[in-house]
Amino acid sequence: MSILKKLLITSVVAAGLISGANAGKKEQKFIIATASTGGTYYPVGVGIATIASLKLAKKYKMTFSAITSAGSGENVDMLDKGEVNFGILQGLFGSMAWQGKGKYEGHPRKNLRSITMLWQNVEHFVVYKKYAPTNNIMDMKNLYGRPFSIGKRNSGTRVSGETILKTLGIDYNKMDLQYLGYTPSAKALQNRKIDGMNIPAGPPASAVTNAFATIGADKITILEFSDDNLKKIQASYPVWTRYIIKAGTYPGLKKDVHTIAQPNLLVCTKDTPEEVVYLLTKTIYENLPFLHSVHKATLAMSLQKAIDGLPMPLHPGAAKFYKEMGIKIPDRLIAK
Image 1: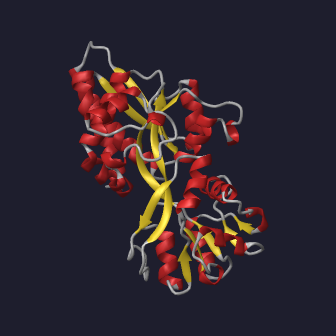
Image 2: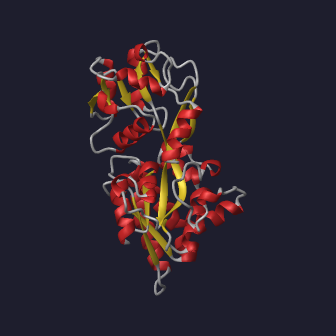
Image 3: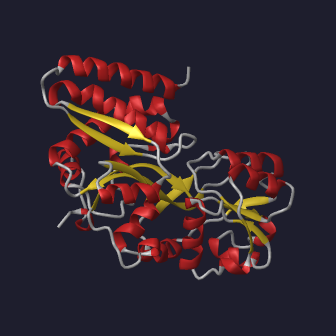
């Protein structure tokens, strides 16, 4: 039986026990918007909802449930309409919504508040070494006129990849763009149908592992980002942070790779009660081993990384917990 099925059964059983225990008492129910069942957002969302319900229902009469959605864009819309209480977002989408950029041009969602970074999408711009004499992201200009997989047409992968390149002055429209998923990208790279691919994911990313295993570290490379590159990207969207892919992470990778990463994060609206957010945040971090058993992506979670790259101010309930834990909160993350 999969961990997700076990979680769903646990949720149902817990709900039954909770209803019996709290018969006649007013119960608060909260909904977490995730994404499709085939990705990471949904199982992690179910895991958070399950542990929060088990820990908070009896004493605080709070229960949580996770629902599927089309992902970050729909989650922002549902939060805005009050259809859900919490949502998981890609950091870039959160930043666009908060700043009123991209699809939110002129309509910033200033009602959103951060709760925690969940796990990181690490940027892997993988290209053939013949096009990467400096091994820096600016070598992407050498792919002008060449086939490059930017990600599926309607994916966050494509949006983040295009945003990074555009911010650095790299005209991706001069490339022969291919709109492939992760596994098809790796196969196309192996078959020399493309000369590079954009794979934002938690390492080790299977598509990158497969590419290095089949093509060889002597022929392909993961482009690096300098501090100056990162500074320029952060100036537009302050969601990316430094990330080092350790040597040995991929077959034949002999040196650390200095790249960048953006967070996936849990958010709510400013009107969410402080006690609810405080208790949810506290429950998440007091039960990380449980979430680790739900999905390996959550192995990246820690209190030390909880506020890294968050694109909008923290909800006061989350800020209260972090302060209790001795975490220094920068001014930009303090809700005014």
